[in-house]
Length: 282
Ligand SMILES: Nc1ncnc2c1ncn2[C@@H]1O[C@H](COP(=O)(O)OP(=O)(O)OP(=O)(O)O)[C@@H](O)[C@H]1O
Ligand SMILES: [Mg+2]
Image (tube, rainbow, N blue to C red; front, side, top):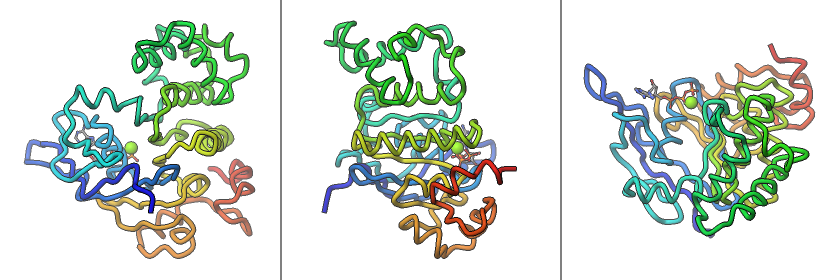
């Protein structure tokens, strides 16, 4: 059996509150094999983002990891210091968030931001080499006239294109794992489908492993092999995507499914369902 790329075991994350510690993540385990895409679904506040941020060791202070292991390529990130984590973030594990504008610096062109990202992890790279890489990754994420777009500022891109730029930044240093936390939530349904398709293509082309977080079971099913369902800080169910869709065991999963608009006679994870999703969206 192939060794797991990410193996999170019994992860616990707590936030100190006025009346004591609140445990946002209560002993969660999940894993990602090399080249695999897994999904984490669950309602708002169920602990999806906190779990992902814990993997990156970016849980907002004073929150902290209070238990468990985060084995990445066999090494426990939970035991890494900040300096060691800086060599992991971006280089080995990257994350894209819901709102690209909050992650992109409005004062710098995307070319500058891409070149800086490449050079942060490859100090030996010349500016020309870093620029070539910037063009290459923009092309990979489907941005046309990539060379010319290097001198554009974030606000000059549409929402969907900005999310592509974020993904370009995330993959610029060839990470093994991409964590995408609600990467499509702020976008309209057609653009959502395009971003999901892009993630799928990158996974195929680059052998990237993906941890995809969403409220939307249908989008998760579109690219993920397995899915974990979270509820109040716990994983309540996990399994192959089709099993979870066809035979959800937990009443909470059934409830999540029932929240999603369905198209008569179309499997929810089919391309047909996605392409016509716009017709049924509220
Ligand atoms: N900085 C923080 N301080 C205190 N509590 C926090 C903080 N961040 C998250 N939490 C708590 O942790 C719990 C899990 O939050 P989390 O952001 O992981 O939810 P989520 O599943 O990602 O929800 P959403 O779908 O809305 O993004 C919530 O109850 C939240 O209030
Ligand atoms: Mg979240």
